[in-house]
Length: 308
Length: 308
Image 1 (cartoon, chains in turn orange, cyan):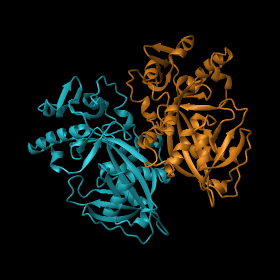
Image 2 (cartoon, helix red, strand yellow; image 1 turned 90 degrees about the vertical axis):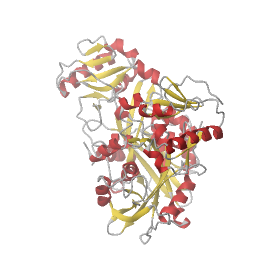
Image 3 (cartoon, helix red, strand yellow; image 1 turned 135 degrees about the vertical axis):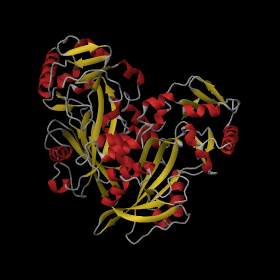
């Protein structure tokens, strides 16, 4: 099998595992399935029967909570309690930064949840990535990559796209790109004016921490040859400008953050580095960079009365 | 709902219709599911019991045909017979041009089939598209589109990408791009040298003629401002250079070939015309341009002995 395809299967290890999917419970809020919960977590959630109602293969947020604020507060209480009881390793990394919980990206959010907890409920995460690249006179197309700080809670010391950040409550996609571009790589607003939206990648990964259905909004940014990214928020160990060959070597090594690979692969596809002529599984690879997460939950029939 | 999303649902009318999918029979060749057959066609195929074996919800090509040539010859005989009996409107347009039939694009073909017949068996079609564009000094980004000839058997007079053609037996993706570029638009090899592979789009459409699971290999080609495409194979009525606004108006009108829309939408996404800021359903739209056709058949369990 092609190494790129193998990588795409790795960051879609949950998407491609029907058996595991079938064992999960649907997480239902206000009549919408907004997530998936693994069987192993159900017994912990069942200790909060006033908050979560378990009903066949559904875990339903109690419909007496009528609105966004009430739902967010009640769920946060449970999560903080679980954190104190050290039930889940992911909650050790409490972020004090929330993600919106909703059926599809364009929909009204039903509640917000600390980003460390969303993987327990299989909530769709959204993020923003900037591919910083240079057209080098002698080395050809080169890509800026960052090594994550060794003090980060998740994926310490692993390699990543030049700029990557989660879309937290209250920020639009473009605002997040600007904010992360400034904080992570000191991109000036003059440079950021050239940001080019190029699409999304979507994939569904599972780790020991939980489930990660993830959609990344992707931007390309061509940089002047003399620009050197400089980190301001202590989240980055260092930046390096790599040739295409060096990028591919790093991408296929265990030094790369698994869930950052789709953005790099998408860049290599769009820039004619990976092509139908050199990649036998080209159509399969492109599909695995865009799996239908927005349909993943909405396709299932939900026979529940809405509370709203 | 967004007009672009509505369009993406239109060319995925089969992908999004679970009920219709469940009524179909799996088309099995040499132990692999290579297609889907609608219930309405089964009774016609059952008239050839030496060729097609109907078994629960499977329609199996008789495993006594041991190789590619034998399978291709036997199926062609049936198709020519059905054509003479005028059983299916699509066979009126017999092309004398074959598509390969296989599980996934990188796999060994199991047989070949005239392209007019593949929609009866829900065989994955592959094609090549060239987005010809110009960076106009006053009008900005402009796109060359073609109007199909009024004498074409399918979609006569409808608007289409500048260059589009099916991947028929014996041609690679790049060879097809060159061949179609020369025949359809008189692109010189000097211009074609600038072809840039940018990925694929995939979608699953159904019309009155049959089922169309389709993967298009997409190329961008920036053209000099003084180049004017000229058709040589009588398949084109005319070419027009359109601004982005004019392109969008045409794309959303009934004058556009439905199954050519995904390539234009993908171009508009990659070139930052459709963005997360102006399209509420951006993630859903991008996903519907890349539905997982390569997994569509292979995910199903097939408990059949291979013949080969």
